[in-house]
Amino acid sequence: MTTVCRIDTDALKRDHPVEEVVSRYGIELQRSGSGLVGRCPFHDDGGRPNLYLYPATQSWYCYRCSIGGDVISFVERMEGVGFREAVNRLTEEVPSSSRLLHHSRRAAPTRRSRTRALGPDERACLAAAVDLYHNRLITDPAALAYVRERGLDQHTIEERRLGYVAGDELAAFLRMRRLPAGAAMRIGLLRQASHELLAGRVVVPEIRLGQPIWLIGRTLDPHVDVPKYLGLPGHKPLLGWDGVRGSPEVILVEGVFDWLILVSWGYPALALVGTYARPGVLRALAGCERVIVLLDSDEAGQVASKSLVCALGQQATTVTLPGVKDVAELATLPNGRHIFARAIEDRELAPAA
Image 1 (tube, helix red, strand yellow):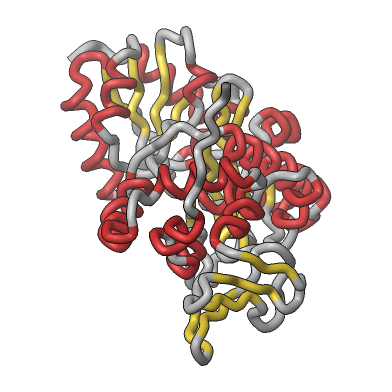
Image 2 (cartoon, helix red, strand yellow):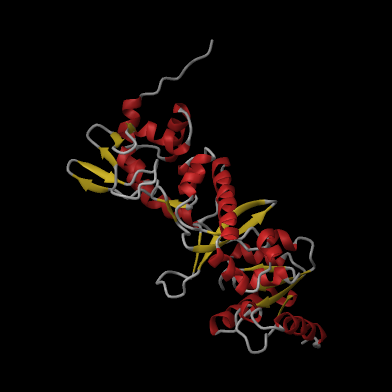
């Protein structure tokens, strides 16, 4: 005889207030009378906020979608799961109401600061986003022209699955593929329903074993007061790891486009995406037979280069590029590829120190 465990939904709602659960999906809420209001994640809420939360009855309702319910039904819709799975996700993530605020304030930064394994829904959403963004780049003249002006050929664009984020397409695309918006929010692709984190950027995925695991985007407009580069939350992985497996020598660069250029030129390259190398990155590089450190020629890049060479020891060496800051700048010169090959050749011919 099978025993069916009863679920005390009243206690569950008390332990998991609807306003706090909804906020954890990145939906900003504002006070409106005795309730709260925010943008609905279940439709393209481009106008006024339509999602109303009523803490007194622990319920929610969208006056545009004409749908509503309790905290359990909200999780069901966000995650695309059934009743019992929604209950499981609520109880697993937030143990009790007495710990909810304490847990949220402490655990949220931890989730962003570490790299966690993506679940099936997260992986599917990330793969769908890469597909969408890649197809958009191919059909967007301005974005495609920008990428080509940086020296990248069509083969590299397609092989590395480069994309462009128009900023108003992902939510609808995920619905079309029957993928849960909640998973896209958890990994940072979506913020507040249909708002895309990387809108207006050329994006580059890190692909491992044929599947994307992370995305970073570069803004096209240098005059906009936003960070030049922006990545998904979590640790930045070394870009290009799958492409250097088995290579006795790797070239370590600082920037995303430095790495893409070297890949297009046929070199085994990795990108730090910055100048800081975490201990895990250093351990990975220590497994390489030889590492050519080729960070930017500015002060920050040179300080980081010395630190890396010191940490990696005799397996590491540096290369100086004449007259340019980095590989991406070199790629804009007519003979940039030849200059780079000569710099590598001169390094190989130089006597050991």
